[in-house]
Length: 169
Image (cartoon, rainbow, N blue to C red; front, side, top):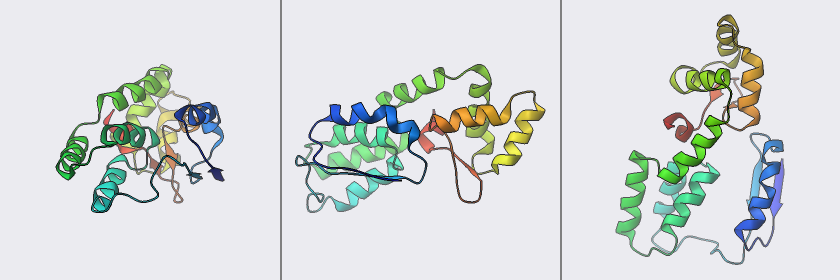
């Protein structure tokens, strides 16, 4: 799915679209344009911007929080320091928001979430579901709940993927 949002000039416009997030499948692309943003990083900051994107692993919440921390900061040393810190410690705001998603899960879903974070990240989805079913959990149902809440995804080879920040949680 390709979604193009043109001339977004306020964060509230994006927040109004968040209920649609569940209907956007993995592999979808959202292209956002704004008059407020520069089309390219400030000269000399290109590598630092790439580092920020890599640290965030494309997670929109992380990009939003880290972008807000770095917005308007002209010192490369500050950027390097912040990116280094973020590599080691997930910002508290991101951790708190991710924890809200975890706390909203039922007990079986939380257990499966933890299993994925600790054991099954990168493993075949069918194998993990078989283990959960064998443990008395409704593996497929709980998997679907986590998937629909965008807490996990599956790659082309049917391997489970969990974002690093969620795994750190």
